[in-house]
Length: 153
Image (cartoon, rainbow, N blue to C red; front, top):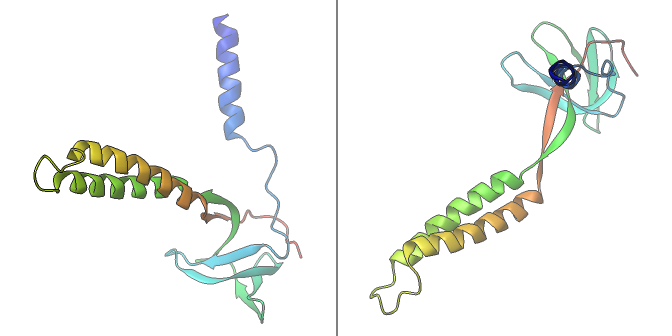
């Protein structure tokens, strides 16, 4: 029983780390950018042609050829990441700060509606929900390196 569990666990761990097939070279029209060794974006546009030693990108008006190799690396958009978590965190922090401030201010105890802790909790959860919803409306592109392989036009 212990051996079969160990084989199952090893299979699952190795399968998660091994790609099913080699990634294909990007097709023409794919969003791509050329990045220098320092990480600065040199050029960005749609891929027109990819050769082993150069790449042609277009910005919609004109096409420009760039050399590859050495310090220049080609990247393409590999997916999108939601901003919901970042929005929820920011909204929650702002809500806690505003709620605690509103609970602490307010003059005498007769007129105060809630304590600083209750105000922070109420507006914190409200800000968390609203920030998460607003953040979910936007996304950020995730860029990845282009695998070496045969050129595609």
